[in-house]
Image 1: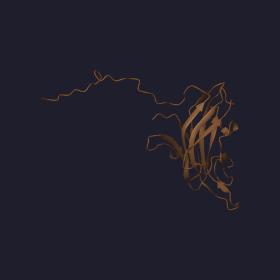
Image 2: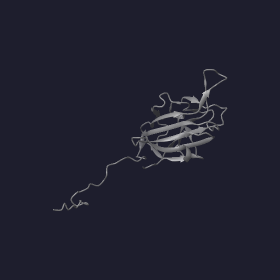
Image 3: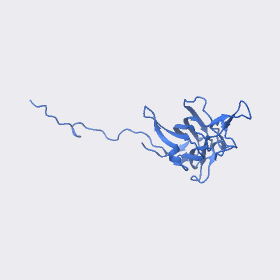
Image 4: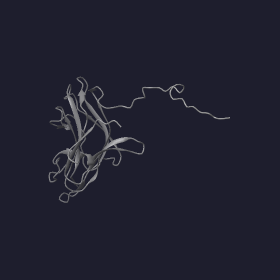
Length: 205
């Protein structure tokens, strides 16, 4: 139940939610909203080490609004999508992670859309294994060594139509200092059945 991620942007709480599957596994799901939106899921602060490359890993699946381009048969117009960005100044400014490593974006959001991410390379349409999840590894190198950073997953949508959106799970980092994310740990206390609330029963004759 512990959560250290922060949702940002107008209508963010209507777009982003932690959802549990039938096995109790939680993942973040950001829907592809049916009106203009610009929201993000922001990580806690992460301190980057000085020696190793910073590597971001996660699993995801996505389905964003896209349609056939009537002016260019065989091509697809991308209306909505998601990007990954990094900040090293407490969230004052953000850069696309593609400035440091390759996230594997699949398309470009069209400039005719009123999407806040228009003209940006992004995760668009459906991932190749849809509706299956796919692993992503982004090696950001050592360009952020020694800095305190945050990562955000950002969704932009235009004024029409909606889709499933973006589901993100198992986010992890290597090349960082400390443990910014909570972890499941065994109970620190043991129970002595003799002295700790031992049951009392009288079976009668």
